Length: 250
Image (cartoon, rainbow, N blue to C red; front, top):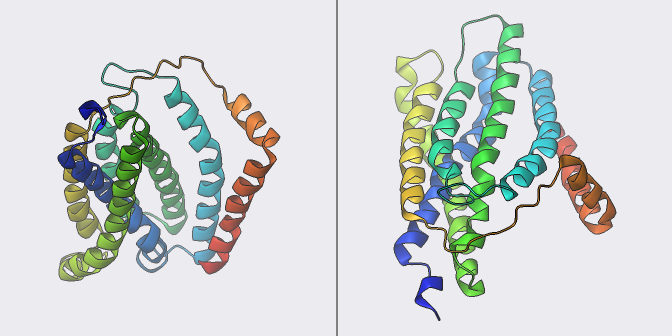
């Protein structure tokens, strides 16, 4: 194997760390935001479910749009890696803002929750899409790509599991010092660690495979391609239907 195609252990560990740090945010929002909305902010479960529905519809639009735009870019620092420098800070701000029990009326709290939740999902995609795409530019060796993807998935699971384990412990310790059961301070502390892990990943990861694709893909072309690819269309439709299941569960 060409040494240039082999991903060093330090880089794999850093890639794992980026996924872990990023998914602190995913674990926090995915597991605790509904309880925060209903039991801390005082928003009704129906309103919270509507916020989730609107966000999932918007996700179906912005995910392919962001991916299509990124695929046409070749920035000075690489194709995907430059996004991993500034998105950790955006995710930090969006996650903390989502758990702020702002002192306004219930109606305005619902609007604030909707805006911050949708914003969080959009900014998260700006990090998540290039994070997973890094496997295609870190090496052109299939075995090494599989190894990198495995490290990324392990990091994701570690981040979600870490949030589920650590956040209740942290927030319970801080609950007596705030009127939000320690949510805001607990989220901020955990996300500071997450940002550190993500930045470490950025500085230690490298792009070794150069992409020469400059063709711009429009949003319309993306949806037309999905529509023509019937198996892919049905798979995506099935995933979209999970939105309603999530609403019922909520």
